[in-house]
Length: 150
Image 1 (cartoon, rainbow, N blue to C red):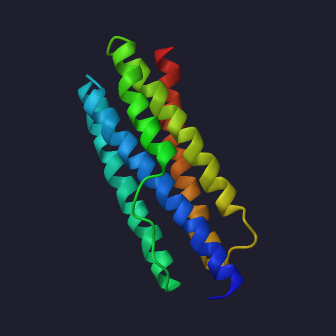
Image 2: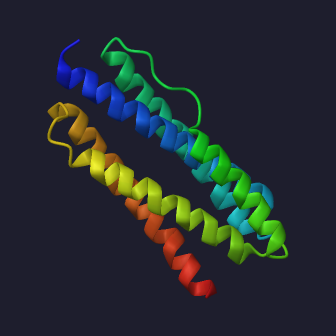
């Protein structure tokens, strides 16, 4: 495997972990919100993030490498924190949205950074640019909801 391919696998596997963190975060948020509209939105987003994760895994496989299939330790801790914070905040949807937006900030930054990585093969950068735009749009929607609650 060439150095650029090795680098691509490393970046993609990092994004897989982040994307799985996000999917699990949305699943947790759907379980903790009381608002049926948010519950539906979070469940749909968890599914979309899993689809994105599979797309990234397929790209890793195209290099003949093994894709990640587990969350990062930080992501696992964050997802548990969402539940704890929600309970401490008296079960408010505002607290859940705040945590979701915090996770979206991390995801948006990681995808943008990866899409701007000139050491990645062009086809990977193109794919990640499209993914980064999708992640940003979803982040912006959550941010808008958050600001409407404050």
